[in-house]
Length: 514
Ligand code: BES
Ligand code: MN
Ligand code: ZN
Picture 1 (tube, rainbow, N blue to C red):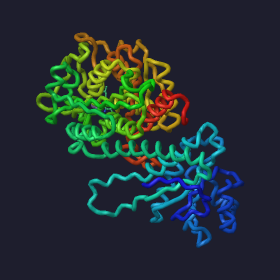
Picture 2 (picture 1 turned 90 degrees about the horizontal axis):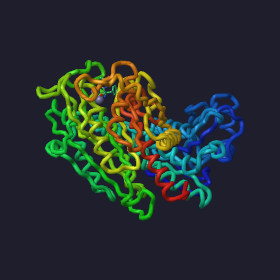
Picture 3 (picture 1 turned 90 degrees about the vertical axis):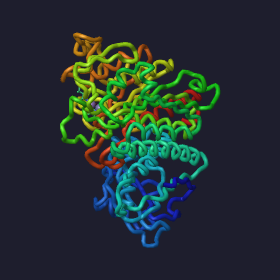
Picture 4 (picture 1 turned 30 degrees about the horizontal axis):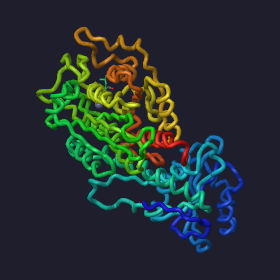
């Protein structure tokens, strides 16, 4: 989709649809809406008066302009109550808008920046970023395997009206960031939507190699024999049951701005993503119901890949490393068995009591490898536990960490992106549940606090690096279509990681262009 900025005025802009947002229950119209209303002989006011349109969150009304405006239609979209509205209301409104626009068979739309005064802590950059994200993500479809072309036409253009030069600079930057973050999330959705017979560890490695064509990105793939030499016993243990060769993928992005706090040569931020391309459970086999969703058990890795690609495209002045231990978890003849003991890359030994707790095994080696970069921060993202789904449901990412500052930054990025995190305890008391009679620890901790014991397991492999763990099991997959979240793989976590990097880069540059 083409994203444009124009000086307006909005009522003179030709397009298939002119989109106006409105807060719930307010009789007064925004300046732009008031002008449009006058041109339409009071049609917008009439709808408000008759309460046919009230502005409740994601409510829409579509009007034909019958030649009274250069735009063929006006679409009213509700933002909900002003008091409760967050930046996410804008994202949702534009996600809803593009769905309605496409239903009408239209392909271009124009919109002013919504409810400016109302979003007190959001800048114009943030608002337009949210518009672009909503519009792009709301139109997402995965059609790679459909042979009948009955899908709706994709949108071609969104034009945002910014009257003065200053606003134009902000809107342009907002759209640039919005495009990058939406494209990253959609790339993740694509990777997760592809079935596991296509999206194998080798295919993920190929996707990583494509990244080497981006600016300042280097890619290194460790093959099985390389991993053996290094002693990645936990990663290789999980891979044993599969015929697909495992790939341990390392990406490195070096933003070029010299002198930046996190520029060339500085301690990197390392992102580690769980990359299980299919999780059968291994010998501790999963039940058949919903097992197909385990093709998305590589979401964490996909998010790391997409985030680094976006960081490079935005030319963020940062040094970022991505680590993707990629393998299937299969119950083959050479698969690990309950009771097997693995020696991890760190030297710690693990008794595998359940082969379905494989994510923490591959991450143990991924995290230990991460510490070798002497990182300023390590963030891992993983579809790690069903217990996360039980504890937090659809709307919160489980967050753990050993560093208050890093946790606070991730939390802030979560609020901004609408991909919110909720902190869980990482108390040592829980380690009792991970004790083994025969090894340094075991890989399961029983039913109680399952998300916590998994995180505590990971904590034993990060040394004293500042570290945050994000459990995205359950937020990674949606049972239903939402305004800008697709049914199936959601890519949730990607915009969060990217926003964290954007915020870091702004800080390292000083207070420029917030
Ligand atoms: N990939 C799963 C976790 C998961 C479950 C993600 C459902 C998304 C939806 C993970 O590898 C797993 O199987 N975890 C086990 C751990 C248990 C054996 C300790 C679980 O949560 O059941
Ligand atoms: Mn599993
Ligand atoms: Zn898994």
